[in-house]
Image (tube, rainbow, N blue to C red; front, side):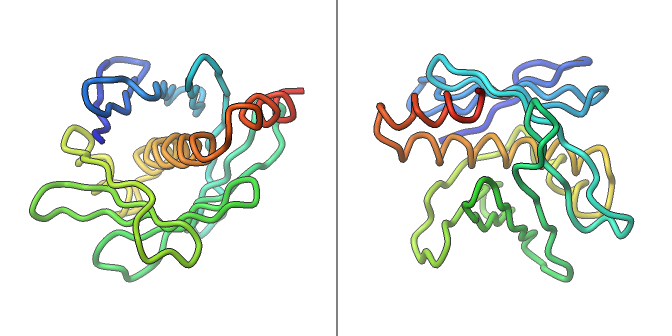
Length: 170
């Protein structure tokens, strides 16, 4: 899979691509600090905000302003690790820069990755977010949110996906 940045300007658009098929579209608006995620005909809106004074986590809220997740940045990690908790699920996200820039996401207690994603076009966002730059951190958080949301929904059977969307948007 690849995460590709497709648009520049005030709205940052990213596509999650697998075998030339677009699996998910994420649109990040840095002015509103919002992420719109489109997956399989469904759309969600999330707001990404700084979580604390110490700048070590980011809060993720749904379209109603209810906190649905948190992204924690691990201090002192050389390979850019962070932990994303969203709606009861926990994902460990690790960025590797060699040999090719890659983002690897693990589930709880998983030895095998749930997702490996090539991230050549967004390499700078990852690097800037780990030197405590708040704007790239929020954008990076929205990208991780999009990837984990994709994992969450693609793991559900089709009937449960509809139920999950109805429950979350009701």
